[in-house]
Image 1: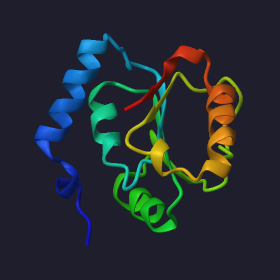
Image 2: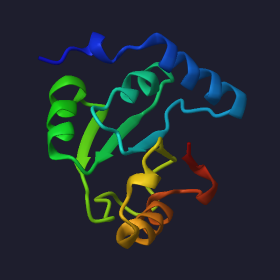
Image 3: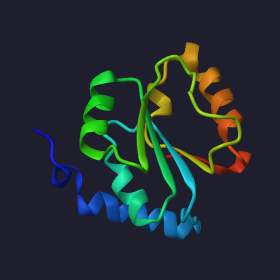
Length: 130
């Protein structure tokens, strides 16, 4: 049984908020992709930052199923992708966040992921890998 409280680690969310503030990023009314979203717990952070829409993408069907059950709503959407293809419109995303995921992508798909990130972003400089 998964509940929202299980994902609210205040120290982790606080660290992300600090990082975002130091970088001077503004997510208000923006569309964000969280590549490697796992259970979608960062959707809580982005909701607090006033995002317009959050897309969590992961290569694990079970994670996506749980994310949709726990965090899915009118602003949060969770998608499965294990091939490097991202089912979103070209130039439709303001920010792509990849938190501890790029090193886990199979080398055969890495180039495809980078091409897809470039394709969906409105501005190339809004890809953050940490």
